[in-house]
Image 1 (cartoon, one colour):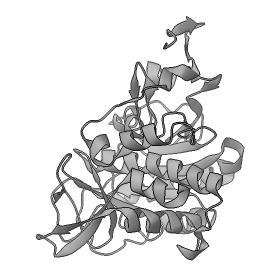
Image 2 (cartoon, rainbow, N blue to C red; image 1 turned 30 degrees about the vertical axis):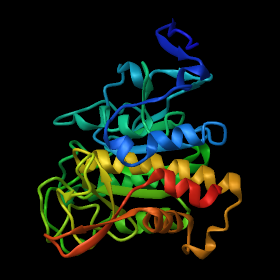
Image 3 (cartoon, rainbow, N blue to C red; image 1 turned 135 degrees about the vertical axis):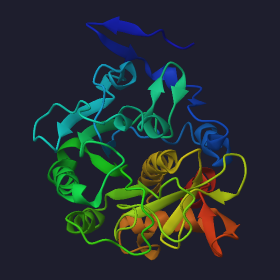
Image 4 (cartoon, one colour; image 1 turned 90 degrees about the vertical axis):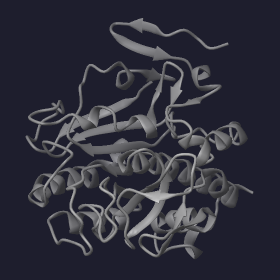
Length: 315
């Protein structure tokens, strides 16, 4: 029986049994990517994100939102907040910011019966720029945010970065900026970093920073249908069922946390799949994902199948 929510000193507490029968925050996309199937199959094997922190690099948050104040099994969902723009711990929205308050839902939500992919994880909310609809000139504050992750990933157990901004441009090639060296260092540290491709139905390029080396570019298929849409290009490494590529990317960030735990628990020898753990995990997602042809680009993309990826390393 699910325990009730108990409000103590303004903080929400939830027992471990709250997630006994997780319900997806986005449907039918979660069913399409076989996330709900994986939850049921591996309920006695995986913790679904416990012990890992996802850094949300976006335009800040509304600190009072109850889903990010919840405490699960004695651990706060929001582990830390930081403002890389102003250099303080106040990560609230400023200016045109709005997006960072909700982008954690598909990956991390565990509130009122609704669950993201890695629903037992923790999050680090890092305000990295004024608005998620960014410009390449936002490179310096984004680089500071990435450096903060580099400096604090051990302290806060950060394994994954959702680099959420999009500049809404059609980049066919990388755009050199201050973030590139940081992305390369994070890849070497074994930290997953991915970004949304964009939502304009571009077929010749994708948004920055997804366009950059050492940042996985995540596109989309229509939920419930293997039809590639929104922004796509040969740089896109994986497509995910969602209504926007920001949700696609959030979903795969959660999925990477599940796959990381599965690799650790099974002692899977990932060295044959990639030069580092993030590249190995992407190779597994691609190998186990469904091939989806896109007539508009002539590309064949791989669609995320979480169940198949976990089975690959656990069975």
